[in-house]
Amino acid sequence: MKKHAVWIMPREEAWDRLKEVVDELALAYGGPRFGPHVTLLGGIRARTAETEKKLRDLALSLEPFEVKLGRVDFLNEYYRCVFALVEDAGPESPIRRAYDRAFQAFAGDLVNAEERDFMPHLSLMYGDVSVEAKEEAVKQLGGRLEVAFPVRSLYLAETDGRPEDWRTAGSFPLGGASRRR
Image (cartoon, rainbow, N blue to C red; front, top):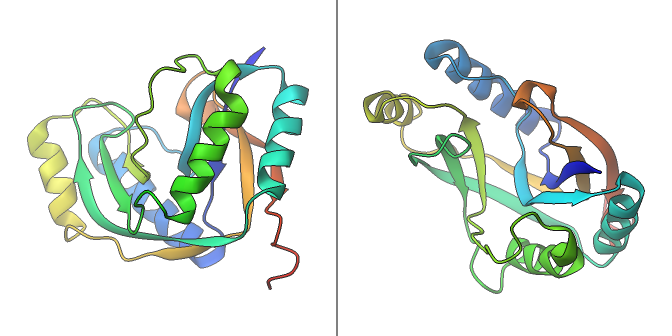
């Protein structure tokens, strides 16, 4: 049994831009480097084959959509140290519907199934740093990160160990992805 997460990952130019920001912040503040992603659902503890099947079915049930990042903020949490919020993520948004379906699909496999704390965001920095350092990082980014990217697949991530060790274990195209190019 491995620990998994369902990720939305930027591609091409958005990946390059966001990876550069993550790497610059890691260098400046001493946190780990990691691949930019929006965690749709984390804390899944199950066999990889079972997780892949559920994720394939989930992806096929979803239509492609777009993620648009905006305000940069921080929390006093290691994995949400500094992040860019996903805009237009209200109750009827495509990302919220995707999360609700993911939660239903994996409810029995979640490490902490009673916690439904979904705040759609893309982390830019992980770490235990001072509030002053976080404020400085947010200021350095101008308080906003205007990046948008299409979501055409969901990714299975293996998230045991340190962030530097995390890896994607598969990509699953959304149901309408082949019809929209």
